[in-house]
Image 1 (spheres, protein in one colour):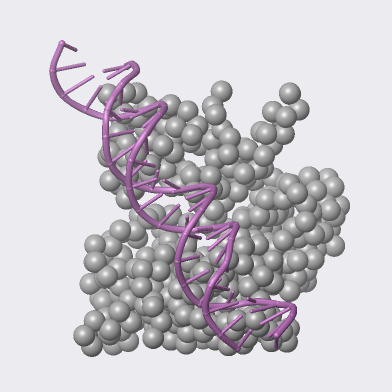
Image 2 (cartoon, rainbow over the protein chains, first blue to last red):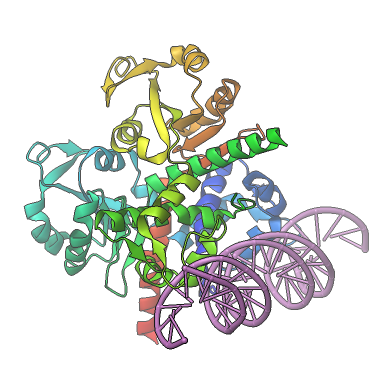
Length: 220
Length: 220
DNA sequence: TAGATTGTTAATCGATTAACAATC
DNA sequence: TAGATTGTTAATCGATTAACAATC
């Protein structure tokens, strides 16, 4: 039994990246890798990789390294990617449609089972074979299908009330794309905010500041 | 002159969030706020907020707090949001189209000036009034318009070669949505990766592990 | 066995929090 | 002036890195 307790978010957020790199290596036919080689590819220290992996168990062999395929499977298992957690998506606007059609939920531990919107122009359309349903049908759908996660692609104004409502319908996990930090009261609530605007602003800061420094440097 | 040096990424990534909350407060007509009030809303400590802000200068008044409008403007200035850095978007698939139409680049310090794709079915279409151009025209366009940032919405296989090429065309900043960590050789390169799959996997981990703990707890 | 590389402990570094003097 | 809240220094906490014994 692995010692899977109090894993820090810093570690957890690196796991998908490890998994991605190991998948690529496997595709390329690489069977074996050392923490040093992996660290060079990832831009991390070998120490950190070993430290991270040993939060969950000893997956390597001393003097040899890690077996790519095996380590990849282990990390997939730790992340829970073999699950098919039922997810629904709310808000089939530009972004919602793109998420629904572009993302492979299946590879990431989920199964997208429903899409909802309130616009009559969208209801009835299909994305990846999934029909866009009227928001009116949300309650009965959740009662029947019992999804555990909701992708929120609705405007900022709507998201607070909506997340509370979804919580009442039994949904505890939220992948939130709206320009708002949702605060679900439930103690078990899990929220992953994706703030694309924040990300873009961070990029702006870096450009702004880099050019600033150049200007400064030129002055001196 | 503020002491804007060696600001850690941890601080920088909180700035857009501060800016967002302050904008909302301003919209609501709030004129004054203390670090304690703000910390309660943001789920941070007052200490951290004051510490963060004082990386850039003293924006508050002792015994009074911060003037919402003024602080919001200051943070906007620090982030460089009043810039209109020219940006292009490459790859007008589902996600690319959604980013181009859904995001307000203008509010985040950028101006989207070009969209490129290689598919004849897409070339000539318009998104938000911007025509999708043939990838063939990329070089001449960049020579003329000199964009400084590129949004990458292309498949994983294409992104490495593409980012190198864009770097040759003078683009140093990348907002990367492809399922790949780009490594641009240029020393001044700035890359902001948005890994939606990684984010989704992190959510999966949390659900997987929360339920795990419940099962464990029930056993004991 | 010798060489290599892990797993793990200890040391360092950085980020967050606490405390309080400065001051509005 | 008294009360409040900042700006800033010091203390704590956590995450990363270094070192090395264990072992394949």
